[in-house]
Length: 114
Image (cartoon, rainbow, N blue to C red; front, side, top):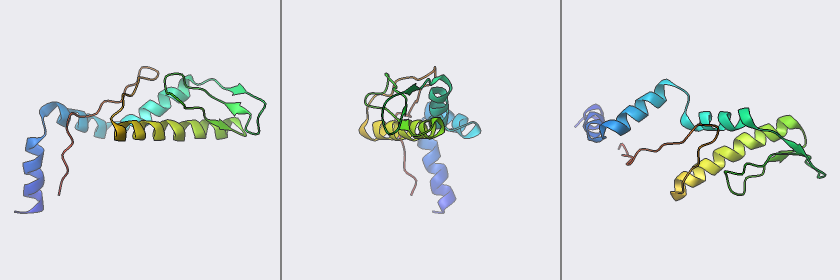
């Protein structure tokens, strides 16, 4: 069986809702990028007495406190921290709260292509 035939066979097994979610994501920004941008758009920062004085707390994401020596470094650290937090939550099967009206939705089942 050719690789194309195997892929087409696997695609037919993906339920319609998951297939629609995958195709709509391919046509726009990746879901995690939208999630990070939603938090960056609504972020406000504090200046604290610390070696990295710019600080941002995200109450909806437990134990996420990015900081930086400059505002831009803090924003960069915020994006990286949120991305890592989302990926870890996905890997551990933990719930991911909506941020700024953006949610991360995962398909019920992911099929590996071999």
